[in-house]
Figure 1 (cartoon, rainbow, N blue to C red):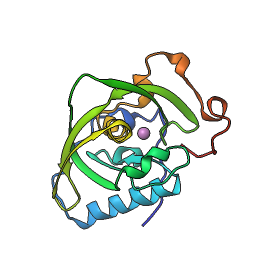
Figure 2: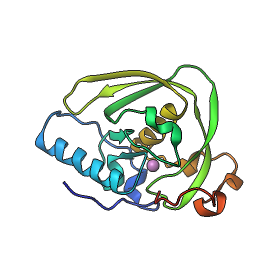
Figure 3: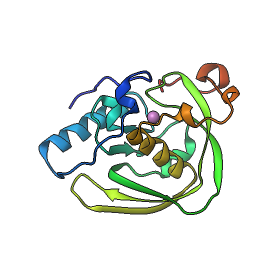
Figure 4: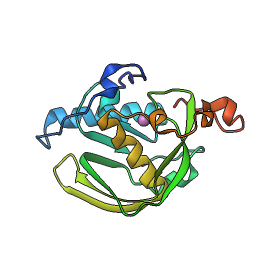
Length: 177
Ligand code: NI
């Protein structure tokens, strides 16, 4: 297990389209996921995508955390999601503030689909198939965007809604991402 450095915006690898995972339940895959888990936990992240630690494969982890900043996050179970397929259920979107471990110290207001179906596989190759809403849907969309080389600032509609976390939200506890 190891905490790995998180690549920051400006790094070309973060803009690449990641490749699918082809082999499940391998020691390499388990080791990668363990490193991602250790890294996410050490930084109080809501989620982490493999490209953020420099491995350009279609794998994200998210959830299973408690955060003063995201009180609604408790309902998201810890999830390893591989080769995800996302399908919005309708056209409804809502805006919410997002941060990212690859864009430290910043926050931006981002529209996301409110109602989402997603599927994929866990590390053992078991199918994951869920319909989710709200914050859970937002986290999945944010993390899976990383697999297509998209960082949340690219989705901000009004750049006036982008700034430093401690300036935008001076009363919230300071966290890294
Ligand atoms: Ni991110």
